[in-house]
Image (cartoon, rainbow, N blue to C red; front, side, top):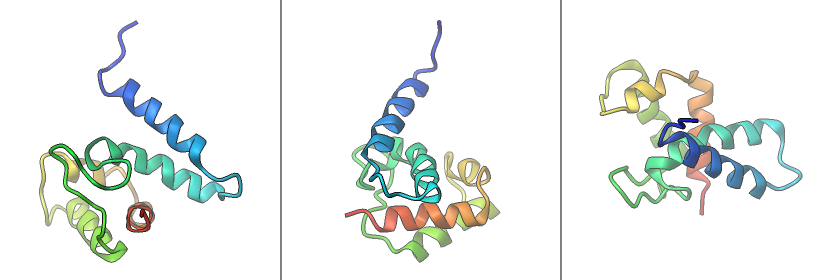
Length: 104
């Protein structure tokens, strides 16, 4: 079976993040975490990028939301972020931004 090079690590990371969720997490929080997993490949599990991705750690949810919406609308372009952002609703992008802004 041929598995895409990026699919398996992303799935494994998703499983690790999902298992680390507190038992009391709401379904909405869990869904947001799953969306955020795709961001972690470039931006790090804690928002601190170690490769070519930009660090998200320390940015406010408003900064992150504004940036994501700018990518989605085409006001800001990137190598792939504009494509990623178009796959989410504005509310989903806001929830992802809140998730990363709350990481310690």
